[in-house]
Length: 206
Image 1 (cartoon, rainbow, N blue to C red):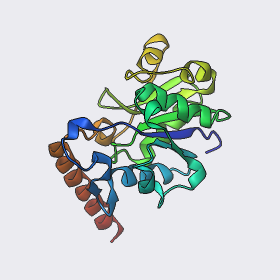
Image 2: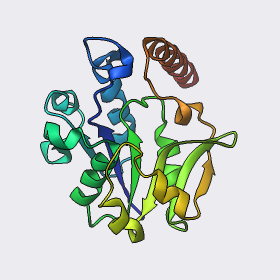
Image 3: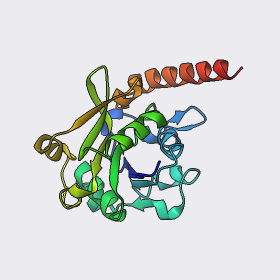
């Protein structure tokens, strides 16, 4: 792909809804963790990837990313919400032609879906993955929106930017674009879906 936006993976939230002593992103998933699998899917696109995370979770990324691609937020900045994490990731890669925002708790999003959204950014200022008309992730932003992304803060993320400008829904055959993990039940369901998809892929190769 000639047009190479950066995938910004967000992993600085506290994950309080999960209700476990172990952070949801540290939970085993496939052969990795939830975060590790999300990163593995992103890296498989061969697009640039940057992770915004906390010091406690940074070691989870060591198998997938170089140290220069891991941005550790101090607690005071992490507490400023998803918007601050997006702003940090975007400013760290300010020269990119665009950015795909991907929450770290979405390990089922396929590389092909990320690439489809990246391709849509060539002709749209904002593009997002959708499955059967339902909006999902990643959400992509073209470089022209840099100044607005770089000043985000709070827990709403980039919703106000998406609401302000025309956004293109890129239809993909991937229910994973709708699946994030906030509870143990959602984790078990995602594990089952991931195992089933892996089994289908192996069967197709034989």
